[in-house]
Image (cartoon, rainbow, N blue to C red; front, side):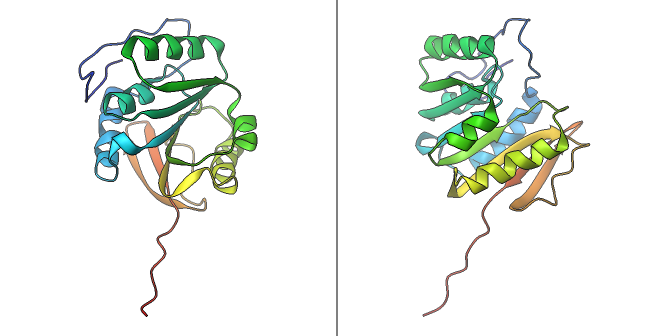
Length: 186
């Protein structure tokens, strides 16, 4: 995997082969960050990376100046790799070893960007539960965005707060946001 832009642009990272991960492709990641770059100033973001795996997405945020990153993954080896890499790159990443659903149920905090990359074979009902739980727990800032990476075979458009999606081959990024509230004229 490679960091696309920012301070560590072009840096290649090699994760151990035994990690149970499917990293987001460079092409998809570059497209995602082009979209996010049009909406956010990265230095001020609070980012939550769920099902973080290698930490690929968090390193990209960190390379672009984001200083408040939290990674959650249930796999001990993934968390150890994220800790090691964050230290090597001098990135402010807080790795948390936890199953994502109990973490979301008990966690208090608000984030500008929440990125979730669950296993593509996760049950469809759990993809839906993930989105519902994030909004029910008020984990997303009013102006924030939740991005869920999933297979093109997992329907997400019918869920509350769905805004739009972008397809990249077999992968889809679904974006969820609070609806804009129009101010009443005085």
